[in-house]
Structures are given as C-alpha cells and as structure tokens.
Length: 97
Image 1 (tube, helix red, strand yellow):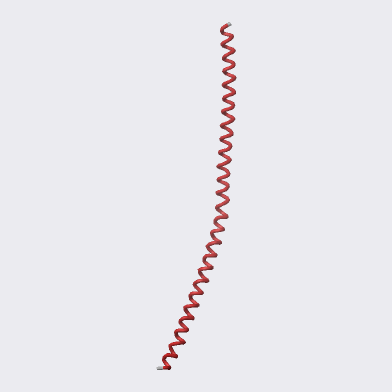
Image 2 (cartoon, helix red, strand yellow; image 1 turned 90 degrees about the horizontal axis):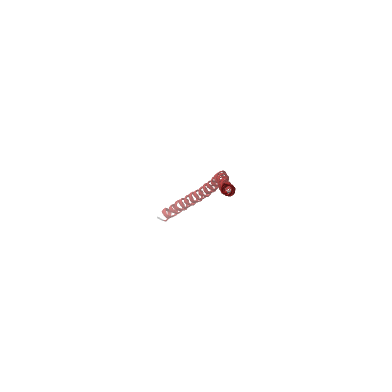
C-alpha cells in the first residue's frame, strides 16, 4: 500500500505541473492577443482619426464661410436699400417741384 501512495504522488505532481504550464501558456497567449488587439486598434484610429478631424475642420470652415457670406450679403443688401431709399427721396423731392 505504501508503494501505491508513492506512485500517486508523482502523477499528481505531473498533473499540477501540466496544469500550471497550460495556465501560463494561456496567460501568455491572452497577453499577446491583447497586445495585438491594441496595435490593431491604434492603426485603425490612426487611419480613421485624421479623416474625422479633416471632416470636422471642413465643416467648421464651411460654417465660417457661410456666416461670412451671409454677413457680407446682408451688408450689401442694407447698403443697396439705403441707396435706393436715398434715390427715391431725391425723386420724390424732384416730383414735388
């Protein structure tokens, strides 16, 4: 019976060693997988981010230009209206004479 105990012990030790090795291998695989995913994510963000910022910049620029154009056109319209009003006043004065 004592011999059976000694025979069992190395088997359990072997099993524990195998399990430990498997756990370490799994852990290493998980770490490398995470690293690869992070790398891939960085690459994607590098490719996508510039496009997004360019789009945002383009949108902002478009907004600015439209605002500027609107201001200019409103100023021009105001000037034209003022000129027309002045002309119509002159015409009205001439008509009264």
